[in-house]
Image (cartoon, rainbow, N blue to C red; front, side, top):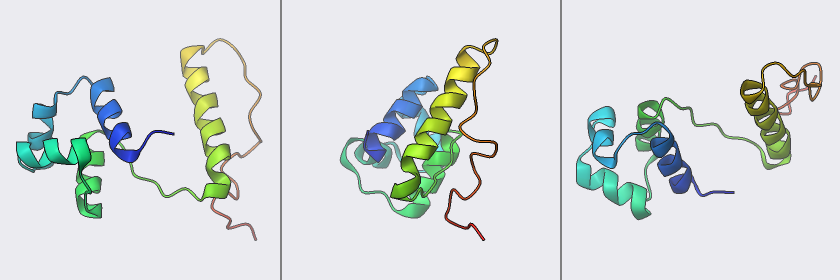
Length: 103
């Protein structure tokens, strides 16, 4: 799995944003952003700004649920790539109990 910094860079590139686009999108200096993307250790509030600037969300996923989340996201990705093929859902409600909040 990619590191968080690798994921940030990959998302930026997928959106076709240049590194120089990000400071104005998130309100930090160009130097701060370059350092952060290369080897930074961003604070949580900075990560939230970056996520917003990349039209993304930050989620905390329990390790024991990670495979389920990846399977669901992969399924959704495949559906969007091939909308005419019917896929069997992972479950009737794949999000049910995801955070361990089953009654």
